[in-house]
Length: 131
Image 1 (cartoon, rainbow, N blue to C red):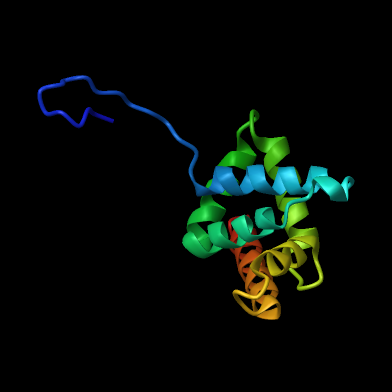
Image 2: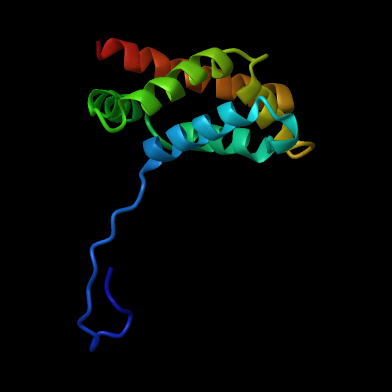
């Protein structure tokens, strides 16, 4: 990152979380909050859908595979993947329900739930092909 003013020569390298890390964080957050429904936010389900829509499944699967092989991130990645499989790959899962609830009247809730489920399954399938 550099300054807007061309005369200001300061530059910084800033590492930010990519979409796969954001997805893992969202999945962990939602999974932890399922036990306390008052703490659940429907928009978190919609955030998961948006992340899945914005990123190619193969790209995200490759990153998930790398994260699962790193001792620092392996357990949390496995937990997130297990949650995605359990609550994201079918239209009656918690993730689909949250995303459908979040769209309200702005979009068809059934289509939203189906989209999330399809994209979650696509990611899981892509991940499985990596071995």
